[in-house]
Length: 459
Image (tube, rainbow, N blue to C red; front, side, top):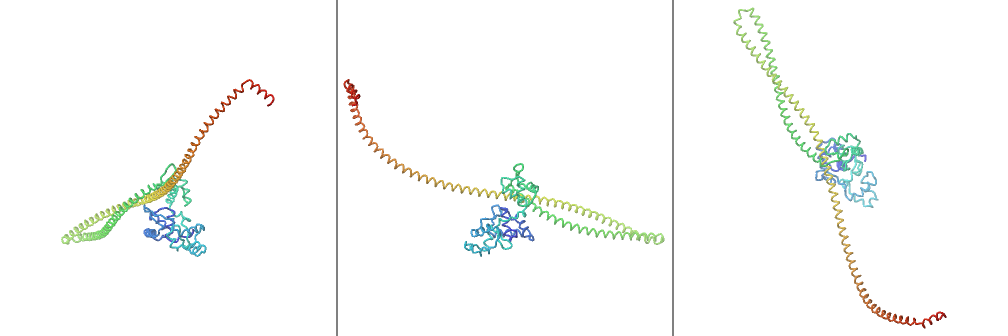
Protein backbone atom coordinates (compact mmCIF):
# COMPACT_ATOMS: atom_id res chain seq x y z
CA UNK A 1 0.00 0.00 0.00
CA UNK A 2 1.96 3.00 -1.32
CA UNK A 3 -0.99 5.45 -1.12
CA UNK A 4 -1.78 7.52 1.94
CA UNK A 5 -4.34 6.62 4.60
CA UNK A 6 -7.77 8.23 4.51
CA UNK A 7 -8.52 9.24 8.10
CA UNK A 8 -7.22 9.57 11.64
CA UNK A 9 -8.84 6.23 12.53
CA UNK A 10 -6.71 4.40 9.95
CA UNK A 11 -3.51 6.08 11.20
CA UNK A 12 -4.38 5.01 14.76
CA UNK A 13 -5.04 1.43 13.57
CA UNK A 14 -1.63 1.27 11.88
CA UNK A 15 0.21 2.74 14.87
CA UNK A 16 -1.48 0.54 17.50
CA UNK A 17 -1.05 -2.55 15.29
CA UNK A 18 2.72 -2.04 15.19
CA UNK A 19 3.03 -1.04 18.88
CA UNK A 20 0.76 -3.14 21.08
CA UNK A 21 -0.36 -0.62 23.70
CA UNK A 22 0.41 3.13 23.70
CA UNK A 23 -0.85 6.12 25.65
CA UNK A 24 -2.35 9.19 23.99
CA UNK A 25 0.81 11.19 24.73
CA UNK A 26 2.92 8.54 22.95
CA UNK A 27 0.60 8.35 19.92
CA UNK A 28 0.41 12.16 19.44
CA UNK A 29 3.85 12.78 17.82
CA UNK A 30 3.31 10.01 15.24
CA UNK A 31 -0.15 11.25 14.29
CA UNK A 32 1.04 14.88 14.15
CA UNK A 33 3.94 13.86 11.92
CA UNK A 34 1.66 11.84 9.64
CA UNK A 35 -1.35 14.08 8.99
CA UNK A 36 -1.79 16.99 11.49
CA UNK A 37 1.33 19.14 11.13
CA UNK A 38 -0.61 22.44 11.38
CA UNK A 39 -2.36 21.57 14.65
CA UNK A 40 -0.98 22.08 18.14
CA UNK A 41 -0.21 19.11 20.36
CA UNK A 42 -3.23 19.76 22.62
CA UNK A 43 -5.66 19.80 19.69
CA UNK A 44 -4.13 16.63 18.25
CA UNK A 45 -4.51 14.88 21.63
CA UNK A 46 -8.18 15.94 21.80
CA UNK A 47 -8.84 14.56 18.30
CA UNK A 48 -7.08 11.29 19.14
CA UNK A 49 -8.98 10.89 22.42
CA UNK A 50 -12.32 11.49 20.68
CA UNK A 51 -11.50 9.01 17.88
CA UNK A 52 -10.40 6.30 20.33
CA UNK A 53 -13.68 6.61 22.25
CA UNK A 54 -15.90 6.59 19.15
CA UNK A 55 -14.68 3.32 17.57
CA UNK A 56 -15.12 -0.08 19.20
CA UNK A 57 -11.91 -1.49 17.69
CA UNK A 58 -9.90 0.52 20.24
CA UNK A 59 -9.92 -0.28 23.94
CA UNK A 60 -7.93 0.79 26.99
CA UNK A 61 -6.37 -1.71 29.37
CA UNK A 62 -6.15 -1.35 33.13
CA UNK A 63 -2.96 0.71 32.82
CA UNK A 64 -4.51 3.31 30.53
CA UNK A 65 -2.74 2.04 27.38
CA UNK A 66 -4.83 1.85 24.22
CA UNK A 67 -4.80 -1.33 22.13
CA UNK A 68 -6.29 -2.55 18.85
CA UNK A 69 -8.85 -5.38 18.58
CA UNK A 70 -7.99 -7.69 15.68
CA UNK A 71 -10.87 -10.17 16.12
CA UNK A 72 -13.16 -8.16 13.85
CA UNK A 73 -16.80 -8.87 13.06
CA UNK A 74 -18.04 -12.16 11.53
CA UNK A 75 -19.93 -10.41 8.73
CA UNK A 76 -16.63 -8.98 7.44
CA UNK A 77 -14.76 -12.31 7.35
CA UNK A 78 -15.52 -12.96 3.66
CA UNK A 79 -14.11 -9.57 2.69
CA UNK A 80 -11.05 -10.26 4.87
CA UNK A 81 -10.44 -13.62 3.15
CA UNK A 82 -10.79 -11.95 -0.26
CA UNK A 83 -8.16 -9.33 0.60
CA UNK A 84 -5.79 -12.03 1.84
CA UNK A 85 -6.16 -13.92 -1.45
CA UNK A 86 -5.71 -10.85 -3.66
CA UNK A 87 -2.96 -9.21 -1.57
CA UNK A 88 -3.89 -5.77 -2.91
CA UNK A 89 -6.44 -3.08 -1.92
CA UNK A 90 -9.90 -3.20 -3.51
CA UNK A 91 -13.02 -1.02 -3.41
CA UNK A 92 -16.08 -2.13 -1.49
CA UNK A 93 -18.40 -1.46 -4.45
CA UNK A 94 -16.50 -4.05 -6.54
CA UNK A 95 -17.22 -6.71 -3.94
CA UNK A 96 -20.92 -5.86 -3.59
CA UNK A 97 -21.50 -5.69 -7.38
CA UNK A 98 -19.69 -9.00 -8.04
CA UNK A 99 -22.26 -11.79 -8.91
CA UNK A 100 -20.01 -14.47 -7.39
CA UNK A 101 -19.99 -12.57 -4.15
CA UNK A 102 -23.77 -12.39 -4.24
CA UNK A 103 -23.99 -16.18 -4.51
CA UNK A 104 -21.77 -16.47 -1.43
CA UNK A 105 -24.04 -14.04 0.45
CA UNK A 106 -21.44 -11.28 0.41
CA UNK A 107 -24.27 -8.77 0.22
CA UNK A 108 -24.58 -9.08 3.97
CA UNK A 109 -21.51 -6.85 4.18
CA UNK A 110 -22.57 -3.41 5.31
CA UNK A 111 -21.26 -0.18 3.83
CA UNK A 112 -18.06 1.53 4.91
CA UNK A 113 -19.56 2.16 8.36
CA UNK A 114 -19.29 -1.59 9.08
CA UNK A 115 -15.59 -1.70 8.17
CA UNK A 116 -14.54 1.43 10.09
CA UNK A 117 -14.84 -0.13 13.61
CA UNK A 118 -13.16 -3.36 12.40
CA UNK A 119 -9.49 -3.31 13.40
CA UNK A 120 -8.43 -5.53 10.51
CA UNK A 121 -9.22 -3.00 7.73
CA UNK A 122 -7.88 0.46 6.79
CA UNK A 123 -9.15 2.81 4.07
CA UNK A 124 -6.82 4.57 1.64
CA UNK A 125 -7.24 8.09 0.27
CA UNK A 126 -8.41 6.71 -3.10
CA UNK A 127 -11.40 4.92 -1.44
CA UNK A 128 -9.97 1.39 -1.59
CA UNK A 129 -9.76 -0.85 1.46
CA UNK A 130 -6.74 -2.82 2.62
CA UNK A 131 -5.55 -4.77 5.66
CA UNK A 132 -3.94 -3.21 8.71
CA UNK A 133 -1.15 -5.78 8.67
CA UNK A 134 0.08 -4.75 5.20
CA UNK A 135 3.20 -2.60 4.73
CA UNK A 136 3.77 -1.14 8.19
CA UNK A 137 5.96 1.99 7.74
CA UNK A 138 8.36 1.36 10.61
CA UNK A 139 10.81 4.11 9.57
CA UNK A 140 8.45 6.82 10.89
CA UNK A 141 8.64 5.46 14.45
CA UNK A 142 11.35 6.36 16.95
CA UNK A 143 14.37 4.15 17.49
CA UNK A 144 13.49 3.66 21.17
CA UNK A 145 10.05 2.20 20.35
CA UNK A 146 11.57 -0.09 17.71
CA UNK A 147 14.13 -1.41 20.24
CA UNK A 148 11.33 -2.04 22.77
CA UNK A 149 9.25 -3.90 20.17
CA UNK A 150 12.24 -6.08 19.19
CA UNK A 151 12.94 -6.99 22.83
CA UNK A 152 9.23 -7.71 23.42
CA UNK A 153 9.22 -10.12 20.49
CA UNK A 154 12.29 -11.87 21.98
CA UNK A 155 11.62 -11.95 25.70
CA UNK A 156 14.61 -14.19 26.33
CA UNK A 157 16.93 -11.34 25.40
CA UNK A 158 19.03 -10.34 22.38
CA UNK A 159 22.65 -9.47 21.88
CA UNK A 160 23.56 -6.02 20.61
CA UNK A 161 24.31 -7.38 17.13
CA UNK A 162 21.04 -9.33 16.95
CA UNK A 163 19.11 -6.31 18.20
CA UNK A 164 20.78 -4.08 15.61
CA UNK A 165 19.93 -6.54 12.81
CA UNK A 166 16.31 -6.81 13.99
CA UNK A 167 15.82 -3.03 14.20
CA UNK A 168 17.70 -2.45 10.95
CA UNK A 169 15.11 -4.57 9.12
CA UNK A 170 12.42 -2.05 10.13
CA UNK A 171 14.49 1.12 9.89
CA UNK A 172 17.98 1.89 8.60
CA UNK A 173 20.15 2.76 11.61
CA UNK A 174 23.60 2.15 13.08
CA UNK A 175 24.82 -0.04 15.89
CA UNK A 176 26.19 2.92 17.96
CA UNK A 177 22.75 4.53 17.82
CA UNK A 178 21.14 1.32 19.15
CA UNK A 179 23.77 1.06 21.89
CA UNK A 180 23.18 4.70 22.80
CA UNK A 181 19.43 3.99 23.25
CA UNK A 182 20.18 0.89 25.36
CA UNK A 183 22.55 2.78 27.65
CA UNK A 184 20.35 5.89 27.84
CA UNK A 185 17.20 4.31 29.30
CA UNK A 186 17.40 2.33 32.57
CA UNK A 187 14.62 -0.15 31.69
CA UNK A 188 16.93 -1.84 29.16
CA UNK A 189 18.81 -4.32 31.34
CA UNK A 190 22.00 -6.18 30.48
CA UNK A 191 21.59 -9.84 31.48
CA UNK A 192 25.10 -10.99 30.58
CA UNK A 193 28.09 -9.44 28.85
CA UNK A 194 26.23 -8.67 25.60
CA UNK A 195 22.59 -9.78 26.13
CA UNK A 196 19.91 -7.12 26.67
CA UNK A 197 16.34 -7.51 27.94
CA UNK A 198 13.40 -5.19 28.47
CA UNK A 199 11.93 -4.61 31.96
CA UNK A 200 8.41 -3.11 31.79
CA UNK A 201 8.22 -2.74 35.58
CA UNK A 202 11.29 -0.54 35.60
CA UNK A 203 9.74 1.52 32.84
CA UNK A 204 6.55 2.02 34.87
CA UNK A 205 8.62 3.12 37.88
CA UNK A 206 10.64 5.40 35.66
CA UNK A 207 7.50 6.93 34.17
CA UNK A 208 6.02 7.53 37.63
CA UNK A 209 9.22 9.21 38.79
CA UNK A 210 9.34 11.38 35.71
CA UNK A 211 5.68 12.36 36.19
CA UNK A 212 6.37 13.36 39.77
CA UNK A 213 9.46 15.25 38.75
CA UNK A 214 7.55 17.03 35.99
CA UNK A 215 4.87 18.06 38.45
CA UNK A 216 7.58 19.45 40.72
CA UNK A 217 9.19 21.22 37.78
CA UNK A 218 5.84 22.68 36.71
CA UNK A 219 5.32 24.04 40.20
CA UNK A 220 8.85 25.40 40.19
CA UNK A 221 8.27 26.83 36.72
CA UNK A 222 5.17 28.68 37.96
CA UNK A 223 7.19 29.97 40.89
CA UNK A 224 9.93 31.11 38.52
CA UNK A 225 7.36 32.81 36.33
CA UNK A 226 6.01 34.67 39.34
CA UNK A 227 9.53 35.66 40.29
CA UNK A 228 10.15 36.70 36.72
CA UNK A 229 7.11 38.98 36.74
CA UNK A 230 8.35 40.47 39.99
CA UNK A 231 11.78 40.99 38.47
CA UNK A 232 10.21 42.59 35.41
CA UNK A 233 8.30 44.96 37.66
CA UNK A 234 11.51 45.76 39.50
CA UNK A 235 13.20 46.27 36.15
CA UNK A 236 10.48 48.74 35.16
CA UNK A 237 11.03 50.56 38.43
CA UNK A 238 14.75 50.68 37.77
CA UNK A 239 14.12 52.00 34.27
CA UNK A 240 11.92 54.69 35.77
CA UNK A 241 14.67 55.51 38.25
CA UNK A 242 17.20 55.59 35.41
CA UNK A 243 14.97 58.04 33.59
CA UNK A 244 14.86 60.14 36.73
CA UNK A 245 18.65 59.87 36.92
CA UNK A 246 18.86 61.12 33.34
CA UNK A 247 16.68 64.08 34.18
CA UNK A 248 18.82 64.68 37.27
CA UNK A 249 21.96 64.56 35.13
CA UNK A 250 20.41 67.08 32.77
CA UNK A 251 19.59 69.31 35.72
CA UNK A 252 23.18 68.90 36.96
CA UNK A 253 24.47 69.86 33.51
CA UNK A 254 22.21 72.90 33.56
CA UNK A 255 23.51 73.76 37.04
CA UNK A 256 27.10 73.40 35.81
CA UNK A 257 26.33 75.64 32.85
CA UNK A 258 24.78 78.16 35.22
CA UNK A 259 27.88 77.89 37.40
CA UNK A 260 30.07 78.55 34.38
CA UNK A 261 28.02 81.61 33.53
CA UNK A 262 28.22 82.76 37.17
CA UNK A 263 31.98 82.25 37.15
CA UNK A 264 32.20 84.25 33.95
CA UNK A 265 30.15 87.01 35.52
CA UNK A 266 32.37 86.86 38.58
CA UNK A 267 35.50 87.25 36.47
CA UNK A 268 33.88 90.09 34.61
CA UNK A 269 33.02 91.77 37.89
CA UNK A 270 36.53 91.14 39.22
CA UNK A 271 37.93 92.98 36.23
CA UNK A 272 35.44 95.73 36.75
CA UNK A 273 36.39 95.96 40.45
CA UNK A 274 39.96 96.77 39.52
CA UNK A 275 38.73 99.59 37.33
CA UNK A 276 35.90 100.77 39.55
CA UNK A 277 37.15 100.91 43.13
CA UNK A 278 34.36 103.29 43.94
CA UNK A 279 31.70 100.63 43.28
CA UNK A 280 33.43 98.03 45.54
CA UNK A 281 31.32 98.66 48.61
CA UNK A 282 28.15 98.64 46.56
CA UNK A 283 28.88 95.38 44.80
CA UNK A 284 30.51 93.59 47.78
CA UNK A 285 27.24 92.13 49.07
CA UNK A 286 26.27 91.07 45.57
CA UNK A 287 29.57 89.26 45.08
CA UNK A 288 29.17 87.42 48.39
CA UNK A 289 25.70 86.43 47.41
CA UNK A 290 26.97 85.06 44.09
CA UNK A 291 29.68 83.12 45.93
CA UNK A 292 27.13 81.51 48.27
CA UNK A 293 24.94 80.70 45.31
CA UNK A 294 27.88 79.18 43.48
CA UNK A 295 28.83 77.01 46.46
CA UNK A 296 25.23 75.93 46.89
CA UNK A 297 24.88 74.94 43.24
CA UNK A 298 28.24 73.12 43.34
CA UNK A 299 27.21 71.14 46.42
CA UNK A 300 23.90 70.32 44.79
CA UNK A 301 25.64 69.15 41.62
CA UNK A 302 28.05 66.97 43.66
CA UNK A 303 25.16 65.38 45.60
CA UNK A 304 23.27 64.70 42.35
CA UNK A 305 26.36 63.13 40.79
CA UNK A 306 26.87 60.93 43.86
CA UNK A 307 23.24 59.80 43.74
CA UNK A 308 23.61 59.07 40.01
CA UNK A 309 26.68 56.94 40.70
CA UNK A 310 24.73 55.01 43.37
CA UNK A 311 21.81 54.38 40.98
CA UNK A 312 24.18 53.29 38.20
CA UNK A 313 25.87 50.82 40.56
CA UNK A 314 22.47 49.43 41.66
CA UNK A 315 21.43 49.06 38.02
CA UNK A 316 24.62 47.13 37.22
CA UNK A 317 24.08 44.86 40.23
CA UNK A 318 20.51 44.18 39.07
CA UNK A 319 21.76 43.34 35.57
CA UNK A 320 24.27 40.87 37.06
CA UNK A 321 21.49 39.29 39.14
CA UNK A 322 19.30 39.01 36.02
CA UNK A 323 22.15 37.29 34.13
CA UNK A 324 22.63 34.81 37.00
CA UNK A 325 18.88 34.05 37.07
CA UNK A 326 18.94 33.51 33.30
CA UNK A 327 21.84 31.03 33.61
CA UNK A 328 20.03 29.15 36.39
CA UNK A 329 16.85 28.98 34.28
CA UNK A 330 18.79 27.59 31.29
CA UNK A 331 20.39 24.92 33.49
CA UNK A 332 16.99 23.97 34.92
CA UNK A 333 15.54 23.79 31.39
CA UNK A 334 18.29 21.36 30.29
CA UNK A 335 17.79 19.22 33.40
CA UNK A 336 14.04 19.30 32.75
CA UNK A 337 14.56 17.94 29.22
CA UNK A 338 16.77 15.13 30.54
CA UNK A 339 14.19 14.18 33.12
CA UNK A 340 11.47 14.28 30.49
CA UNK A 341 13.39 11.77 28.38
CA UNK A 342 13.79 9.54 31.45
CA UNK A 343 10.06 9.88 32.07
CA UNK A 344 9.33 8.66 28.55
CA UNK A 345 11.64 5.69 29.14
CA UNK A 346 9.84 4.73 32.36
CA UNK A 347 6.53 4.99 30.54
CA UNK A 348 7.78 2.60 27.86
CA UNK A 349 8.88 0.11 30.51
CA UNK A 350 5.54 0.33 32.28
CA UNK A 351 3.69 -0.38 29.05
CA UNK A 352 5.89 -3.40 28.30
CA UNK A 353 5.47 -4.78 31.83
CA UNK A 354 1.72 -4.53 31.56
CA UNK A 355 1.71 -6.19 28.16
CA UNK A 356 3.77 -9.09 29.52
CA UNK A 357 1.45 -9.43 32.54
CA UNK A 358 -1.58 -9.57 30.26
CA UNK A 359 0.11 -12.23 28.14
CA UNK A 360 0.92 -14.33 31.24
CA UNK A 361 -2.68 -14.04 32.43
CA UNK A 362 -3.93 -15.16 29.05
CA UNK A 363 -1.57 -18.17 29.07
CA UNK A 364 -2.67 -19.07 32.60
CA UNK A 365 -6.35 -18.88 31.65
CA UNK A 366 -5.79 -21.08 28.56
CA UNK A 367 -3.85 -23.63 30.65
CA UNK A 368 -6.59 -23.73 33.29
CA UNK A 369 -9.18 -24.27 30.56
CA UNK A 370 -7.11 -27.15 29.11
CA UNK A 371 -6.75 -28.77 32.54
CA UNK A 372 -10.49 -28.48 33.14
CA UNK A 373 -11.22 -30.16 29.81
CA UNK A 374 -8.75 -32.95 30.71
CA UNK A 375 -10.46 -33.41 34.08
CA UNK A 376 -13.85 -33.70 32.38
CA UNK A 377 -12.46 -36.27 29.91
CA UNK A 378 -10.88 -38.29 32.74
CA UNK A 379 -14.18 -38.32 34.62
CA UNK A 380 -15.92 -39.58 31.50
CA UNK A 381 -13.26 -42.30 31.07
CA UNK A 382 -13.66 -43.36 34.73
CA UNK A 383 -17.42 -43.65 34.27
CA UNK A 384 -16.90 -45.75 31.12
CA UNK A 385 -14.40 -47.96 33.01
CA UNK A 386 -16.87 -48.41 35.87
CA UNK A 387 -19.62 -49.38 33.43
CA UNK A 388 -17.27 -51.86 31.71
CA UNK A 389 -16.23 -53.28 35.09
CA UNK A 390 -19.85 -53.77 36.12
CA UNK A 391 -20.56 -55.48 32.81
CA UNK A 392 -17.52 -57.75 33.23
CA UNK A 393 -18.55 -58.50 36.81
CA UNK A 394 -22.04 -59.54 35.69
CA UNK A 395 -20.52 -61.66 32.92
CA UNK A 396 -18.07 -63.35 35.33
CA UNK A 397 -20.89 -63.99 37.78
CA UNK A 398 -22.81 -65.75 35.04
CA UNK A 399 -19.68 -67.79 34.15
CA UNK A 400 -19.24 -68.70 37.84
CA UNK A 401 -22.85 -69.89 38.01
CA UNK A 402 -22.35 -71.98 34.87
CA UNK A 403 -19.11 -73.44 36.22
CA UNK A 404 -20.72 -74.24 39.58
CA UNK A 405 -23.48 -76.12 37.76
CA UNK A 406 -20.87 -77.96 35.69
CA UNK A 407 -18.94 -78.72 38.87
CA UNK A 408 -22.03 -80.24 40.49
CA UNK A 409 -22.61 -82.38 37.43
CA UNK A 410 -18.94 -83.39 37.42
CA UNK A 411 -19.13 -84.36 41.10
CA UNK A 412 -22.20 -86.51 40.46
CA UNK A 413 -20.43 -88.15 37.48
CA UNK A 414 -17.35 -88.71 39.73
CA UNK A 415 -19.45 -90.68 42.20
CA UNK A 416 -20.75 -92.88 39.36
CA UNK A 417 -17.19 -93.40 38.16
CA UNK A 418 -16.04 -94.40 41.62
CA UNK A 419 -18.75 -97.02 41.76
CA UNK A 420 -17.74 -98.40 38.38
CA UNK A 421 -14.08 -98.25 39.49
CA UNK A 422 -14.79 -100.33 42.53
CA UNK A 423 -16.66 -102.84 40.38
CA UNK A 424 -13.79 -102.99 37.87
CA UNK A 425 -11.27 -103.45 40.68
CA UNK A 426 -13.28 -106.34 42.02
CA UNK A 427 -13.47 -107.82 38.53
CA UNK A 428 -9.70 -107.26 38.11
CA UNK A 429 -8.89 -109.02 41.37
CA UNK A 430 -11.08 -111.93 40.30
CA UNK A 431 -9.31 -112.07 36.89
CA UNK A 432 -5.89 -111.93 38.56
CA UNK A 433 -6.82 -114.81 40.85
CA UNK A 434 -7.88 -116.82 37.82
CA UNK A 435 -4.62 -115.86 36.09
CA UNK A 436 -2.55 -117.05 39.03
CA UNK A 437 -4.46 -120.26 39.14
CA UNK A 438 -3.85 -120.82 35.42
CA UNK A 439 -0.16 -120.05 35.85
CA UNK A 440 0.08 -122.57 38.67
CA UNK A 441 -1.53 -125.16 36.44
CA UNK A 442 0.84 -124.34 33.57
CA UNK A 443 3.89 -124.96 35.79
CA UNK A 444 3.10 -128.67 36.03
CA UNK A 445 5.56 -130.97 34.10
CA UNK A 446 3.00 -132.65 31.93
CA UNK A 447 1.53 -129.34 30.93
CA UNK A 448 5.01 -128.01 30.02
CA UNK A 449 5.77 -131.05 27.89
CA UNK A 450 2.41 -130.75 26.15
CA UNK A 451 2.99 -127.03 25.44
CA UNK A 452 6.47 -127.62 24.04
CA UNK A 453 5.16 -130.44 21.91
CA UNK A 454 2.40 -128.23 20.55
CA UNK A 455 4.86 -125.46 19.77
CA UNK A 456 7.16 -127.85 18.01
CA UNK A 457 4.45 -129.16 15.73
CA UNK A 458 2.91 -125.79 15.26
CA UNK A 459 -0.34 -126.57 16.83
